[in-house]
Image (cartoon, rainbow over all chains, first blue to last red; front, side):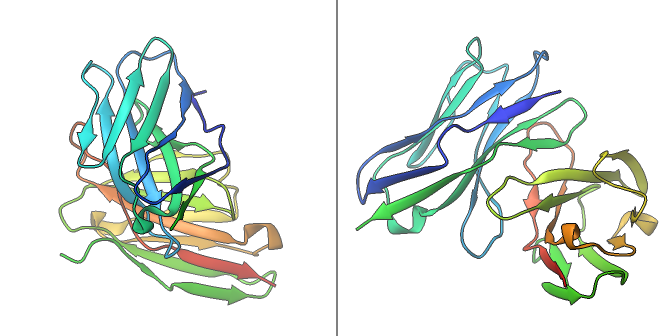
Length: 113
Length: 114
């Protein structure tokens, strides 16, 4: 079964600094999609960024970027110029050929002013 | 379109009672998913529909759980004879079903079984 592991239960960063959240996954498939979701205290999941496994280029969305290492099965999220509004739970997720998302355990990100 | 709607937002019920939750997906999305999330954990997959067909059910979905999506529009998730272990946030999500499109999640229904 596919699994997603986030080894950092909690992270904190100073406002305006850069932080990297780690994620590894286990799969035997070659074609899949990876996502980072943000869940603020209001509890609604919001898609932050996505990556297609067949693309070598790392995805970027404004201050958010990923480091996708397919051979190492690693998919980290970098947040640049951290803002107070970035504080949330962040979930890494993998979508299988069966089209369901498999989530990691999450990383709670705190932004220190 | 206002996104994915879930009703109710909160539900408190006594152990042994039945509860039903509703999810209204984005209208053009043909795929609908139910997840369960306990405090401090990532969401766990329960079941999903493509249009009105229920295509996959997790082993987490015991016989007390049933989900429907009549006419491929809204969906309901029913839990019969609730147990304290059913207390969780129940999340609904939908997607169009094309390529790398992500899910759009609702705000969830928080169930507390007392």
